[in-house]
Image 1 (cartoon, one colour):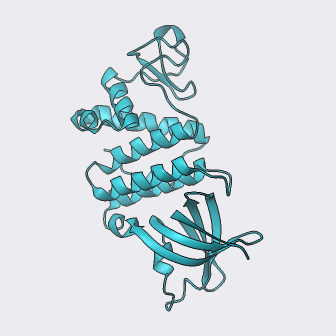
Image 2 (tube, rainbow, N blue to C red):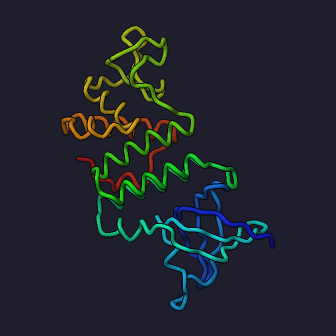
Image 3 (cartoon, rainbow, N blue to C red):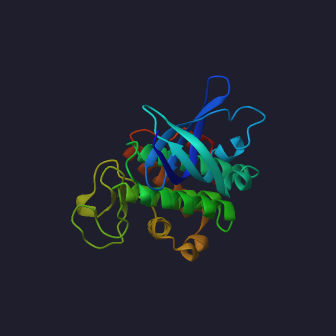
Length: 243
């Protein structure tokens, strides 16, 4: 079978037979890949721990008819080791993994930007410099943007008039002016819209200076925006604590 190498983040795993696992990966060059890791559930396995969710790995794979086979695995960054001891960071990181899998829908289709965003997001989550929920919200907005669902927080999405605007609608794609307001639109505080824009571009001083109530409102709007474009919410989001 032809061999190829790639770096990847392990998104999830599930059991196969008595000793194997199917590993779902987001790779740098080959997009989403599902591959078999043979024998990794045996206690004698040398590299089963390298194929746990969150781990950034360098892999060698053999192409298969339905599933590829992992033949080598070397750890590049064990994000799981740093996230596993912090509930907030672990659950927020799990939501990031699920988002990546949901947004990269086609197997073996390159998704370099999504891969780089996920690695960068997990690195920021593991570093602990920013609160877990803020890293998650920033990642969600950026990954949605890369997927073609970029929100607008400074111009009306209907007419293009520059804001600030008072109305936000996930189905429209961002903020709306009073003339283009749609029924059911949210009416966030102006400061909340500023926070959303800062999360999108990674302006952390603005995010850190924000009032907690505006951060909570921004998180709720990010979740609504994500759920609209994914057509259903993330299962893992139920475990993420919003403060």
